[in-house]
Image 1: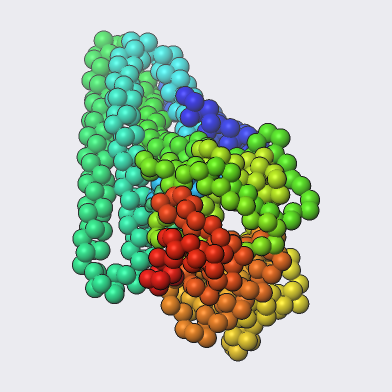
Image 2 (image 1 turned 180 degrees about the horizontal axis):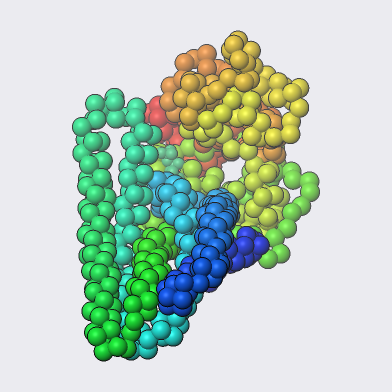
Length: 573
Ligand SMILES: Nc1ncnc2c1ncn2[C@@H]1O[C@H](COP(=O)(O)OP(=O)(O)OP(=O)(O)O)[C@@H](O)[C@H]1O
């Protein structure tokens, strides 16, 4: 019921279209019901009396009703579906906007293919139910009630008997509703698994091919495809029983009316025009029942999809702005960690324990430590991608938990080791840092990131496409484009995850120069993998198993002969 109420809310912005759809639906229903009544009058009163004028009048009215019905059907099909399309559009936009607000912890635990499914395939089902559900319920109710009214007026006994099969049909429909709902829900889940599997294989196509694992991928895909096939076979089996039952009951309905009608005629309680009108009404009553029948199918299908939409819409972001979240100016960029302790939702162990350090504004610190020590986790807490369970992180003395997320993130630039570029032009990718930047600013950013010469040599220059995730560029070029993007953003705080992969020496030198230019006068935290970077840092934090075990500069740490010295002397840096 709550889900239904949520669904109804989406009609509100399109009330005019909804009323138009309902209005023409009623007109078409009334036009249909009147038709057998006119036939009966014609057969009973005017045909025996050979009243040609009245026969012509009634036939003209029937023709007029046919035209009215045709026009209202046209409006209903066109504008009813447009109503559904518009509601689907609203839901899709709302869902996309909601997904954008969800926290990292959500994306850590769901498959991209599942999200894609909900936003594309699932919502496709909405258009039919949005348009047909209210219309079919209204038309069917009107037609069933109206038809019975006329039937009772003709012959109460026969009308009462015909109530029995109608009641059985309606019971049959509802009793199959739950089975169909769970069946359709299952089909949608399996489609999501297929999407997820395809996405995974296509994104990892380099791995697939380099390990020559096409057969393994096919096997994994066959598994999910098999489950999907099974789910569909199951739902069609349910539908087969459902429709067979309905058709059997409909045929039985005719037989019942003819049998009882014939006996009533024997007894002189019914004449031929009454029986003809009655049989016409049986046809008319079967139409709304068939409508309800189909409605039961697509309603379950659409509602299963809407249920999955609501499920995702109800996921609350873990990280939201506090009630009195604030901003401050100017941001100098001092960063302090005070006794920060953290674990990921999904992991049982603490990833960081009592981490405390301070980076004065404008200084550079390098973080070193073995893989899995917690370096990336430390930096992801600064823009509040995750929140620590204990301790405090401040920027210029302001607790990041009290700042507006947007403000906080606007003042932090991040250059990732695995650069993500959008499937767009180089221009669009750099402008992502400042969409309203001028051409001169764009060129300056590219120059400062040491990527301008490369772009200028491309036939399409800034308008060259980088391919999905930037596949058409080298690792070094991608990284310099992302540095140009941060130059445009111009934040006072910089987080840089240095590349571990061996870049060619020319690329490495250009990135190093670009990085140094970028970090000038900004507070910079570098997850460092190169000795040259570490040596230049004002301070080095040495992390081990989530704890800071040494702090100092290169010389002092070497002198200590501790863990840093071990990393240094075993050339792990
Ligand atoms: N999103 C996540 N969900 C759950 N656990 C995570 C997540 N990200 C990292 N971890 C775990 O947290 C620990 C610290 O990981 P982190 O990525 O911070 O280490 P790191 O020092 O940056 O390692 P590397 O140098 O290899 O990148 C690891 O044990 C890792 O498995």
